[in-house]
Length: 230
Ligand SMILES: Nc1ncnc2c1ncn2[C@@H]1O[C@H](COP(=O)(O)OP(=O)(O)O)[C@@H](O)[C@H]1O
Ligand SMILES: [Mg+2]
Image 1: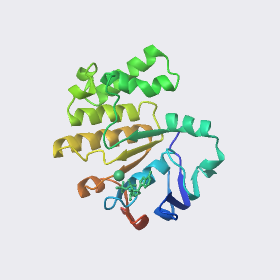
Image 2 (image 1 turned 45 degrees about the horizontal axis):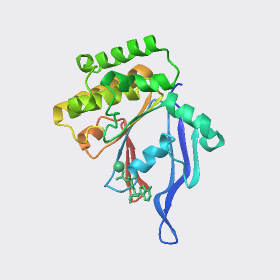
Image 3 (image 1 turned 90 degrees about the vertical axis):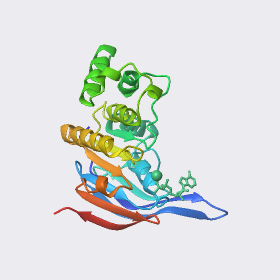
């Protein structure tokens, strides 16, 4: 699917506290046009991961509505949302979440398998992705045999395997050194350009945020700044 335009219409997220709800996101309003490159910054606990989970259809708002291309996501069945997550969303988690008993190439092929891609095609494509990430020579390594930067590159290959229109990365360079950070960002940006995808990167690192076109800042569950590069 091509990159969806995402609208947030008064989106709030709360959890049950002691008797009353504790709000983690408060009345977010805004739009992310398909294909945009957005960074989200803000202090720990301000709601960045919660927002990413909502954008990626891993979670639903407590109040308000998220729309994809004008259509409320909540109007879809859970089955349709699961399908959209599989085919249209690529998630890169902070701690990689590679399956420890699968090799690098098996991890990359997994979402294609779930999407029904035939074995020869998914193996070929998984190799191609690992080549693009510069780690095809590590195809048969298990995650614990890889460096942090290599693991993250496998995680990116896996996230973009089904050519999602929306790529969400939660502090993807948090534990990497400067050189590995540059490699990972360059690969993410190349994947975005190829697929004309939307890329949303949560980061604490101003150098990482600076590479995006648009910069959102969250504080205490609210968007306190929204700046687009001229
Ligand atoms: N499942 C949950 N139940 C209760 N509170 C949660 C849950 N998930 C996150 N929170 C709380 O929501 C707030 C924001 O969390 P998070 O979105 O992970 O922040 P960030 O990613 O910006 O560090 C934190 O106070 C966190 O403790
Ligand atoms: Mg977080």
